[in-house]
Amino acid sequence: MEKTRIIICGACGKMGGNVLSLLLGDDEAEAVAGVDLYPREIGVPVYKTFAEVQEQADVIIDFSSGENLVERLDYAKTNGLGIVLASTGFTKEDLALIDEYAKSTAIFKTANLSLGVNLMQALCKAAAQVLGDNFDVEIIERHHNLKKDAPSGTALMLADSVNEAFDNQKRYVNGREGIVGARTKAEIGIHAVRGGTIVGEHEVMFAGEDETITITHTATSKRVFAAGAIRAAKFLKGKPAGYYQMKDLLSE
Image (cartoon, rainbow, N blue to C red):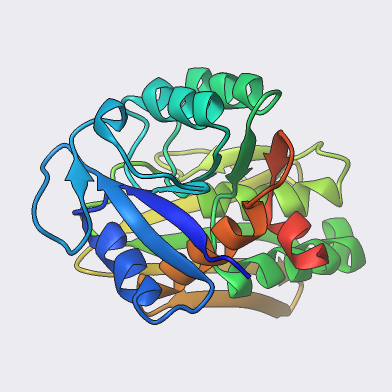
């Protein structure tokens, strides 16, 4: 079986380094090149732009940002590559662009690449279905002080899962300030905490009368996300155009 050949976008960043490190010991996939605005020696050729890439590949793993999104989507489309979008913080315009490219390109996108978080998502939906409106739902997410977007994409993913149990009738309240009045049953509270070097913590609290149920996931290393991205890249190799998510990978 031929190895899955991967181009790492954001190759010289922390997550790019984690992906490269894990691939060094992988028998099924390998890094053939990197793209980064600030190239440096990392053991594979690194280019400033995709236009400079010479190596043949199967999949792009993108741990950069929403900046220059069109460039990497165009490269994937033109060269018949799949692309794993492993970043968060995309704008509505970015998401619309991704949906459009998914008509002609194999795109894997999820708010969180951790297997544990995706299990948590299913557990939260099941809990909401059982507990119903008798329990108030509050989501607390904690991340390092350099994270730019809030709330996290994972917090929104978890909120969406809970909301599915209520036919998407709940509204999201991002934090609370001032005299906001009594909490209503029609809301899901989402709260963002930023500090230190916290990799990622997500807590979904179901608060009822005289009892509280909490479902929590804690990531202690960013390597868990790199491992998920590599797993997604292997899954995406050879897939037809379309929009793929973690549930597709897990079902296969």
